Image 1 (cartoon, each protein chain N blue to C red):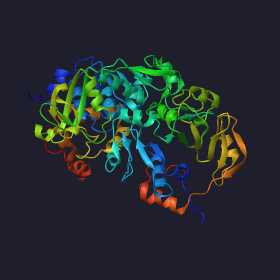
Image 2: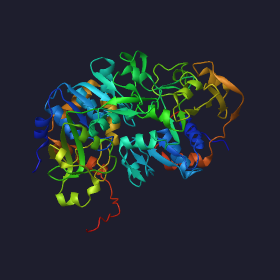
Image 3: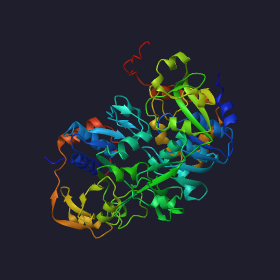
Image 4: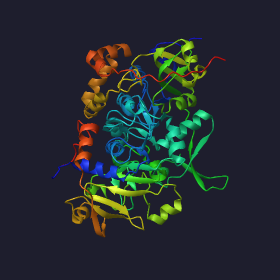
Length: 300
Length: 258
């Protein structure tokens, strides 16, 4: 049965005020189109979880969608500070919960595999354990000393952008696969956005590449270029210039408002956003081809 | 011939020289990335570069701005999930070298990348946080810290212990039974600091033209200096050429300092 719907319908149906949202993707495949649609629909009081909040959560926090962030590295990757989230934290206007990358990803791993918590070896850097009471120590029941544990993270909704999937949501991803699979399996509801909707036969031609099976997916949205200014491996490049530009925009509240007005509220959807970026940007983000060697699964 | 070079070039070249051929290195963006690529093009062609985004054996064709740049993926040996990179590679003990940076590094090599001033819930300055550094500091066999030598970066004690150095001293780290040996050197633009038998960072080397007094003035504790600090070899023309022409032709990371 097709799960195809517009992104606008999917966000209306599956993202509710007060939800815990995990918009997945470590630098790669960040679902910006969905973040912008959440802003346009004026969702409120969200708990925004991501290892790296990145610009997507900076923008959603600026637009007033969030009451809390859960993160492990709050920076603009490769550039510096994530100014808006940082400013709200320093001002005491935004709640937060913080982990190391391994702690954050272990929370998702626990959520995705259905266990209540995940153990990790101690790191002896005790200050974060003291600051965050959800990070605890337990005795190894097999006598190996203490381990650190973090509780399962089970988001209400995961949003995952993929290279291609079929209309049922069986999805192929490649390149940096950070925590997309874990987020999808951990979450109660899953929204996929995809560069391409392909025939099921394409998915079945390379089953090892299917990280997310359709039966855990609720909505499939065909959204080319949904990751910009992040990127989609093999489709278009990361817009590093925009990441640098955001550092300037985000240092001025008026510029942030102007950005949101023009590029989020001022466009109807991702297709209009991409057109508006213009030919020069399209050209700059165009990549050349580097295909893998063909894999032979064999006929049996 | 006297070559001129920036502080960033000096840091990068000295860091590259510490890498050994065959090392598996957990790489960060910026200067550590340049140092690894420089070592790979000079004395250590067999270095395996691992990125926390889940890339193993990267061969970046261009300078990555972010830790998750697509150039790290194309041509890599393997790509895996973040859970796998931290669990199978780092926690399991498959990483030889980690690079660390931070806003503060203290007398025992502990690092703060979380908050400065105030307390955790009401910080004066909120920094990005651990990312992968808490685990790298604990589990990589050897860690190197690259940082400009400034007093504010080297307090007696960090405001927040994001990543473990020698904690309160080497014995305390040993009692914690972490698999990694901790920081083995801090590379600055003045010289090198290495832990003594108690784990205290001690000045062991100076870059050409720098003095122990420079280092002491720019350190927030009473810095110990070994009897005869050695002088590092100045950057060679070939090292500078590779950095400037091949690795960072636009000077994105190397233009810093003078």
